[in-house]
Image (cartoon, rainbow, N blue to C red):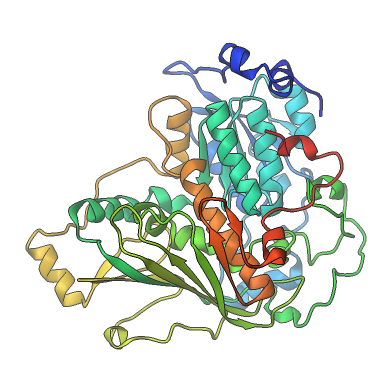
Length: 470
């Protein structure tokens, strides 16, 4: 990747004196945002279409390692399971997405795109596998480009830390794509904390018990055997900065990357950002001080367990009592209900929040909470103590566009999403080796397990070191 003048100043140490001369482009009140989409198949394509349908966005570039692919985003044997389990069908190929933006330039390598068009792009949306988020986001920020990145914002603890530092250093607009963080639950949770309705929380149960792609794989003892690379896929760029390039396999690409420790963050990183986001932000959880794998079924050095129950302990903070969270995943690893939930319909994915005075239940994304028992909730609604309507607000995509244009602030910037994703990274470490460990919230180190501590960061693939220097 060639270096722009802005990057030269950063690397030469002249940023303090010169960076104010090189801000990201300031948009006029009626000016459209020039955007590039990186990752345009399946979820990435959905993100691109959401932004591209906004009249204040001009989609000028598209980037995907298989940008001209018209093959299924998910292999046939996986799409069969979509029908079997009633899931929504895959949402299109890179070619299908690209066809909607015929005037956008197309690239396979985001580094080349930034080399050629970095000065024209105001913002990027990133809808690529977990292990690629960091390098792409850093490359964009080094070019003074605002960043929207799908959850989790990065795979490792260290990568989240660097992205938070970069956000502050470069002064750019950032947003993590946990879309429910702009939904009714966001405004409800904030209001109920401000009103003192949610207070003195001491425990949370969170669960995601749906089928996962790696559940049928069994005891995996290594990476899959080599298969022919389809079409014009740039398999090297797909890896970005991970330490070692693996042979192509359909069990790595097309969404299956999520099940591998090296490439994904499992069910926790996938769904935790939609279930625990408001709990983490408005209860000011920060980072845990102890993480325990209470139950693991099918622990594996390569893929995530078939089932896991992970516990996170948080100390007292800002007048709030110490509390803990139990995370449940796995198709049969359901929450064992306490008495208060015996008559309640508790759905997965979802959560139950226990406080000194009240118990709350909720689902995922932007779905609002209810108070248990329901009769008490209805009485509070009737008395006007709580309300159902939390007003009209911009959705998560519009919120980002508005922030780039200087109208709003993003609701899930890296400064908010970073510690949440670092909690996911710690949970993934516990899922990988089992047992428990103590985490020092000040030094941000695991103090009693050297191997677990080594997993806070990853080895860097040669040629990608520049993104880790800040």
